[in-house]
Image (spheres, rainbow, N blue to C red):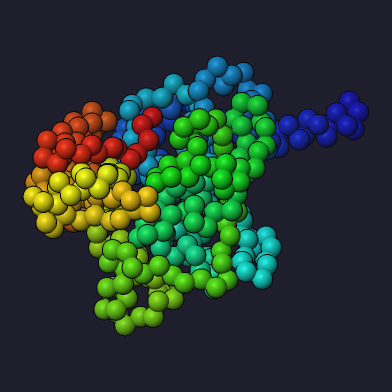
Length: 353
């Protein structure tokens, strides 16, 4: 065998990840729902995709990309390859007069990445502190909290096509961001693995403190509105209102906050003057889904082994041993009750697998 052949063989071995079979997915989704994957792999570099494409066992199977499993609604066993993205890395790419461009691997823990940027003295992501999940999954859902969305700081992302290996850089506009939405949930759904995300963090940054309870939290603690203080306030509020998935299975907010026309808001407001709603740039209104659910009497109430959380009615929790059918039954009941009372449709936020 010639030297070039030896090198090629070594390269193939180096980039061939370990594919496991019949893996329990319960630990990999924060709702704690049962399900097994026919094949499962932890991917630490995008180059390892080539090894997966060369594996004949995987050729005819669907491929599913998994981040932190914090926005996942398992439907049962999966006759598929589940790719757990664990691509690491975070560093400053470049600096301009106005901004810092920061790169992060798709497998980086989101909250740890946010805290790291703050430790460097860089603001911009502080309102998104303590959101579970990974960097690579954040753009798919366009995660958001307290008046800020990931699209506000995302510059571009690098993704690899699962079946062809094509490398593509998606600019901000190409991602087609919307409320909890992106192109990766529509035309490009299930086709790409996001390996890296670049964020543009402005040097002259004014933290957003006018949404929800953040301003009140800062005032109560006597803290100035610095990025670090805002992150601290956000984390405090989230810990009070949201359960720890390690202690009580959940996927965070289970329903989208519905966005409705002004006439619908006015109709509801006439009967419910304390309606919680937020004006949108296009003239429509975002209604607080948690408030709607609470008015229907579901806050703290259970249906079998699942319930709407007592401290935040928007969060569906697994009290122990719940199945996907249990989750569906409660979700559909809540949707029906909200529709009957307010004439508004609630849409489930977690992705169904």
